[in-house]
Length: 272
Length: 71
Image: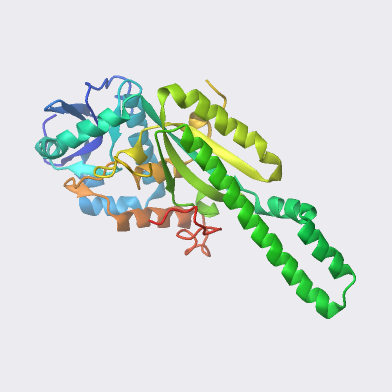
């Protein structure tokens, strides 16, 4: 635990109960916990040559490095979370020495305890909804009377008129698609939120990042009481089957460390 | 419990990065990855996925709608 010259202290998470490190020791070198006034910081020594300010910047553009380190970050926190409630920290939170970490625990200690109290017996779940827009489009084009009407009109129109009617048809489909996406997203989010103690909507991610063919239409996170997890997952399952055929798909993952529900000043009253 | 707990099965790097880079408690440690640094990571990610024409899409949604939180 001594801080030799080229070492930095990497903070993973904070707990109130003493964390059991045995499970996670294999994931990273030199893991330990730092105790200060009723809180534990789960930390590890890392090399300055990797995580020092300039070196870190260089490493962050190396996807394989990021992949390995972000995975370790996540796995360590998940391991600790199996036994006790955690406040997960952002990837790459570093201190020069253990004293720096303790000083931080001194400053925010009371707030951390409040947050940990709120998170007790709850789990974070993530729900992402995707839409195969082409599939949804064709379903709508074949079903909506308004659109079918325009379609018929096109058949009996002159070339010039048909051109404008086709444009109109495309607009109607676009509108209907947007409406359907909003409606489905809202309804699903609302129902899942009803089973949760808190919910958040996050930024949508583009296809190039999701590596999926369909478009993300909702990226959300929920804080769910342990007692409600079963119902929550069942609901996500039934929403999944309900609209599968028209082109929606739901991706429900968890339990995650409560990354979305440990904002310092915001925890209370955020998003209801 | 239920078959939907897909966590171990197909959690992509994205799922992890989406959380560990943007969320979690952000406290001024002696060193903290800045927003600009996070952009670097996503940039690296996208270069590797060899998608060039999507530069602006990472911030926009396919259907920008009231469902998206204004952040």
